[in-house]
Length: 214
Length: 314
Image (cartoon, rainbow over all chains, first blue to last red; front, side, top):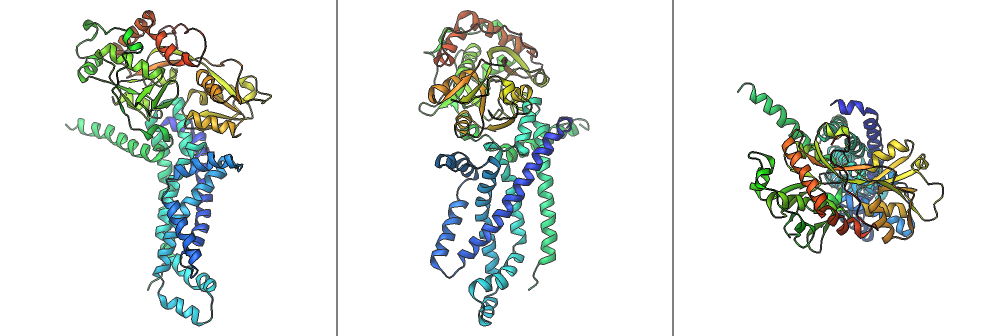
């Protein structure tokens, strides 16, 4: 494994990019996902339709296709963002579809009585969602969202294919120089494993803290 | 028994782990590589240069050697690409892998077996050293630059081609005349090509952006994702023909001796392959392959094949 140690700074730079990519796209995915989930349970048919179309189209497209489309397709219509930004947008939009479905299943775990009670005390749809339903729904889906975050961390490695120098791309470059694929990629794999293990532990911790005992 | 078991575990475990992590980490980093799983290349290239070279004499196929193993198997397993224009690219129209490297693989197969039967194992770019070491492939033909570092892991026959990296820019770009001008600029390169290391050495403060394939790199250059694109000169010449809004600046600035990757320490096979290289250099088969592939974009007569063993590490 001394190959990894010799190129330690390349690996840590790559890891930093991977972490930034993960954090930013997860934040984006969470925001978009919750909005889409709210649309899917809203009483307005148009919003429900838009939400369903969103989830079906992003969940059923390979992420690599999205990345290539965003990186090479958008400039054709005059929209050009830096590669890193483009990757964040594509990954966030893609993972948001999964988050939306997780959150929606969380909403379904909240007893109907809660919504009825919220309505009875005079809250509108938005208010009851924001103040009553979502807080309970999110607490019920900590584990699934943690799993999505783990998948998202792995998925960021696809950004290497469109020029983002993340951990995977850094490993590729080191290997080009050192010609020792097994230690190099095992090293990168251990990096991803460490991040994901940490995410898993944190998820368990949060889940235990916020779980609703019914 | 007490010795063999742990040792076997010791090699099996890292390999299994590596396969897993490879799948997770790099499965899709080169999309076009994995798009077509190593297709068997059955159509004989008799009409082409392969006809011009003979078959190895039976005395050269030493008993118990790698050559004999390949001959008995009936086909040669080549680690190569399917997405490298001019070098080794799958033609979806006829299922044939075309290019200089692909043709050389067929010639070698013909020399050993008597017919140009080749199976190309793709997605080898990131893992070719491992594939050679564990015997998944017999040889690697993949614009594989001979370097002393790599020669510690694998053996190189050849060099069989001397390539040079050149710089492509959009027409009208000023201020890029030589590799040193790339310092401080964003430079596009093909992932896992010799260009990545060449740029890092000659223009250390250049920001290198890599894409999986040549068309993607070209597109990125034309969309302004970088000021320059560094790639093998022959490929760039082909790119300019396709997109006249780009132009190659100056002359090639590196000398990359491409070698045939072989298993380390297989000296018999290495000298066998080197003998074959000398034979095709003298018979004109090498030149014919050049004409048929790289010669379709580079004007002039074929260059002389590089001298065997002339590169450090070969």
